[in-house]
Image (cartoon, rainbow, N blue to C red; front, side, top):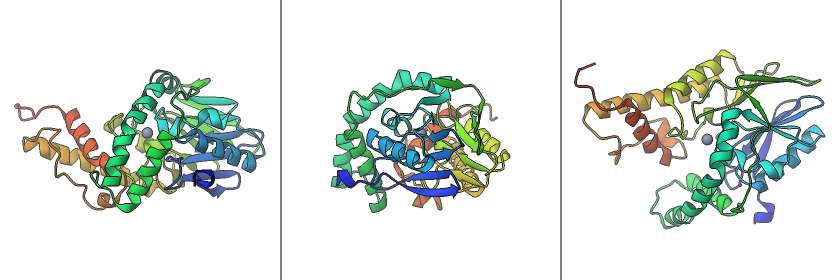
Length: 313
Ligand SMILES: [Zn+2]
């Protein structure tokens, strides 16, 4: 099965612009983007494993007629960077902060993931960890992908860094590589194609999946999503889930707002941030995958509110 495992499906967003959408059973886990700039090829995110990264590099070569000139790391999380070396880009691009985080944390995160995964897999398979069948499929592939990743994998950090913006001008189109700071993670990078009004958002957007928020900053995430809407994109590629647009961005903003409201209610009810047993996402978020993140997100958002003020402010 592994030999024929399909890690993503390709979707043409415009001539020369493709989304690689992670399959539920593949080792890609996150989505990626492939752009033919004309004389330069750009790939956005490297997926979870070397196997998926290698397949993505092959797809980029086929679609652009070139090896991958530039790989953009949207942020340092393992499911977006571990395919980097196998994808074999000429240059990796990201912020200085993402570069530092890849250097400082990538190896340690892979080691801790590999240590935790066997218990998680056992929990899923035994039913101890609740998950819908659709969710179980994705989580199993995620965990198997981690186990299939060599423990000594070296992850190439960015060789080219930007602070706020880097514009790459090809003969066919330009790409704006942008960072509005960190919202989902300490530093997040996106790619906007102004001619096609397509934006690749990494985990600044999740669609039909609970985002993982505990490594970021909810207020900054809302600020960044408003900046992204200000670009007036027609289509937005999330890190997880199908291609969407502004409605999906607004849905995520509403989700963050609902967590903030619930966290404030809980604080006024005198509940500790960690006492989240029985907290369940409300519709429409009750149908979202990665449901394990809901309570973690709520805990994180409430914890950031701090203790209830006795001054009544
Ligand atoms: Zn992430």
